[in-house]
Length: 483
Image 1 (cartoon, rainbow, N blue to C red):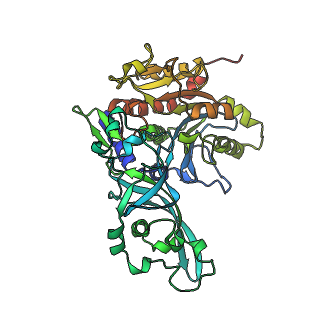
Image 2 (image 1 turned 135 degrees about the horizontal axis):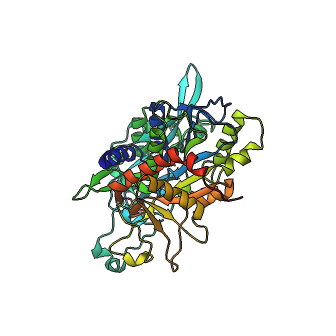
Image 3 (image 1 turned 30 degrees about the horizontal axis):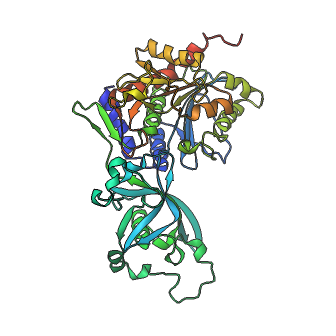
């Protein structure tokens, strides 16, 4: 497959995934098209060797797996893990802000974003809503994804004439300055439908039962204009919106760019690039007829939410979701509860999260002998203090697979005088007890609203993950450590 073809598919994935919810929805569509069957955590699992399955949790985490035809309980799992979330601005529970004749949207910062990059961008909102449905006198509640395509908000910078100190550095007060402007008050008021005008406080008696069913009781929580736009997009009435989780999103689409068309310009490359590459690798490593005939293990991809804020949630890597999946699969094939410990020791996790490429304008920020470059393939991340979970055994496995398939590979160690970031790798390695290697494709502008990586590295990542799924079972049988 041509490098540009894989990258073009990545761009399609990115443009369909403005939020973690949309990324899971897009992954779900692709898995179903590839013959994966959806199962549900609330139900019993009836799994069969040679078949392919997936489940979601909170619709922001997704786990997909293909069971080898020769799998028996106690055999290992070959996993690539990544995350679906990225730093962003999330709407507050009460987002209605009015200042100086302008309607603004209250947001809270999510993760460690480069917040200055959010200024002067054409923004919209996307996420999920809980919508009330009435039918035959009864009510039900629908979970629905929503995305307003056109730009509806902007965070304008202050003119340099009014802030001469900006030449010494653009300093953002995230409480006071990071408020998207939605509209002017007068235009919003002139264009407000009469039915929107405080439908609860229209003179009719209210015993409180109505307000508990509305996201905007009395028009106090969110601007009616925003709710009108969301309702129109969702095909419902504003009063039927019970609650939502929304975030501000850049409307500029992801593209393949550069004078030589060698780069991907996009938001959310950290970490949807790795999510996409691992998902595509799993699908392509399990799609051909009889491809699982000789597989003794389970090939799996796990894409978690909330990595950017520490993974400590019901759907984060710090939750039991990974162990739950491994246990339930193992127990489906045998009632012996002791087999899960054996399975974990036979398993291997590739923790895939984007890496820092050498920046030509800030080359001093990289350690002299560890300078990952664009077009150089996946980066194996090392840290003696266990900020990454890589060790000699796990790095060897990943490097050996690369060598066999002539795929380039690089190494990264942070400078001793700089702090080191982390990933889901140490969380899962310590929480589950699974052998882990931390890797990622090199990129620039990490946590900016607009990031970039190399087209070649998208292809290298996909090929490396695919080779891992195909090769690990045989390679692992040749490695002896705890003997």
